[in-house]
Image (cartoon, rainbow, N blue to C red):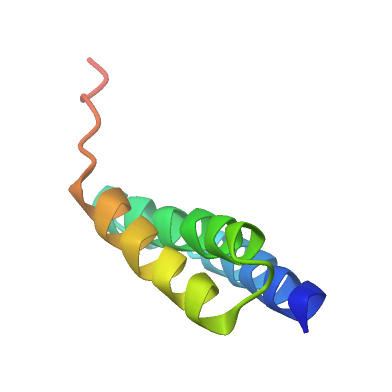
Length: 71
């Protein structure tokens, strides 16, 4: 079960990274959710609650990150 949560979070991250039509904010949110889900899974030993909680927190943080425009 532990391994399954980590694999699921990694697949989610890779699947969402393939969406080319996302805005920068949407992309940051998806990346944050994927990284947060993996981190939550690792930190809680594969707990579903930890994985989902990490994904939520990571998504919120990713959504709030603003990158500077390249000029």
